[in-house]
Image 1 (cartoon, rainbow, N blue to C red):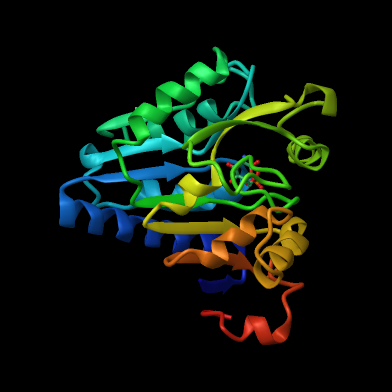
Image 2 (tube, rainbow, N blue to C red):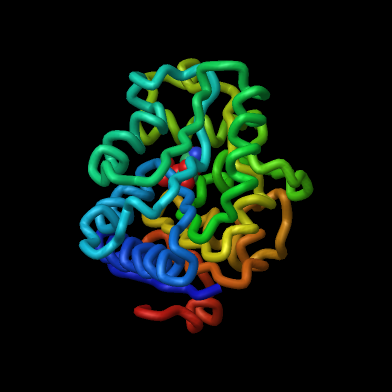
Amino acid sequence: MKLHIFSDPKNLGQASGSLAAEHIKQAIQSKGQANIILATGTSQFETLNQLIQEKDIDWSKVVLFHLDEYIGLTITHPASFRKYLTERFIQLVPTLQAVNLINGEQDAQAECHRLNEIIRQHPIDVALVGIGENGHLAFNDPPANFETKNPYIVVQLDEACRKQQMGEGWFPSLEDVPQQAISMSIQHIMASKKIICSVPDFRKAEAVKNCLENEVSPWFPASILQKHADCSMFLDQHSAELLSPSFRKQAFNA
Ligand SMILES: N[C@@H]1[C@@H](O)[C@H](O)[C@@H](COP(=O)(O)O)O[C@@H]1O
């Protein structure tokens, strides 16, 4: 894992968005197109802002997949990840070759099946992900399923995850946060050639320490990233503040 620590979320996002652009261009150059996964949430604001500003990406050669989505939320709900990606990315790069959003409003197992058929034909070149306050990767809350090979799965959301979503202001109360979601599985995220993980904010400091310094464990789902061959971890000084000095030594831009 390559560890990068920045002074603030804006610098973090500029660096992670630029690296994503580089990886996308490399994939297009080497095989004619790129398959990407985009995450959502506050942690991705600056990264996506940077990515949409990149000038020399041929978006008509890029196929987009969606990391996770609530079950039962309409696309017009403020917390809908489809709404988020549509407004913050898809409308801003309208020439994408294909967009594969998760529709959590219909039968969830059928939706997983539909998406699994498509994504199995599109090996992922670059995955943009974040880490939740409870250490989740996508919506795989602890203890995460590290075994399933199905690309998309139905998951239960734990209280810590639901509280985070409410705390970030996406929902008026905890009762409004759905209990289930469709998430890309841990194994499928790990099958991406390159992973860019952007994690700003002091709220993530404990999860970051647990996932980067502890042993790999389903109880710290994002700890699995330690095993990926090409994962770049982007932190800011706040999310990195609990890392031990010896661990921080490996960071670039510290
Ligand atoms: N399910 C989303 C993910 O797509 C995101 O990458 C991660 C971090 O969330 P946030 O960016 O809101 O802190 O967990 C969220 O709950």
